[in-house]
Image (cartoon, rainbow, N blue to C red; front, side, top):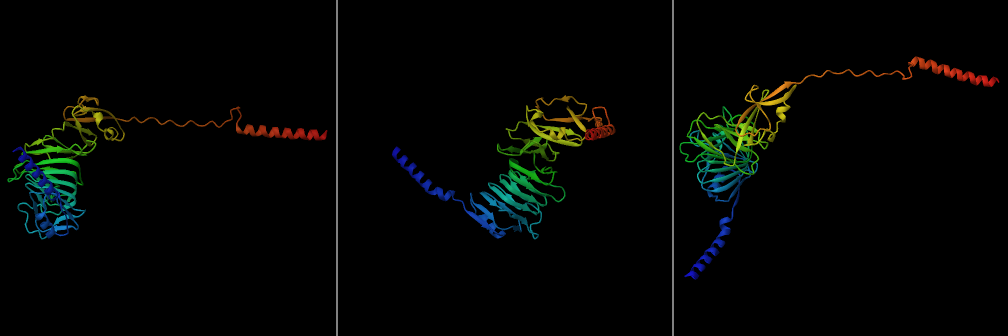
Length: 371
């Protein structure tokens, strides 16, 4: 019986090895128009790569489910046609990554959508690497109960009235809470609402994660999401949600936010718990006000308690930079150079003396000749 089991196991291994090449073999497709893109997405299987060779204009939304694929824009764009027939009711994103799908969008521009450029819906997982989103009517990205991984994202202006870059949301039909993973960098031409927390839906919880290799990081404070750059300076802040929302940060993030007010400026830094102010670059604060000399930091206001830079920071804190006017030093007049001769005679006296010496010398010469 034992020998039979060995033979069966051996046969299973052989069959698996024979099938492995066909299972693992991915297909590379090239597409140049909407119909080909739709047909290719329909037939594509896990591992396939679809590369655009031209800009593609859609006449209606595309939804991708139950497959792991990549769409390489190859520097091209996907946009909505003016004849878009679906109106603005329901799902009107250019691309929706839905249940069971994991889609990487690379080197691609998504623009001119009736609603969003791309939607991560429910369990859908979308990776954005080298993706630009611009001129989408509702927002650039909708994370509607899905998963968004940011590798390299550039946000232009999105939204008809107010800018909305990445919207965190949970619609009535979504079963999962949204997740945003930072795994690279995020840039935006706009400063407001780069991340927007939806206020009029079922969102009551979402999760922020940062990979170990990421250049930028996500943080939370209160009901707000913050994006920090490679220097840990906060560069973008979401709206402050009016709803009580639970934001679950990555367990590896043990950070606090330091807000520094200086003159008319404000800087925010994310620092690890227990770090000191010396862990961040304070040059802009200490040298940023013309005619003022930095004195010290105080907690809250200029009359608050002095905060020493070698103090360990264990919780989020607001500091005020205190300055004093730089005293103008009296400008000393340069000393006049003494042009007089150090032998006590002025220039006129020197000329007369020299003339007399020459005449005397001439007189002596003539006297010798007469002798």
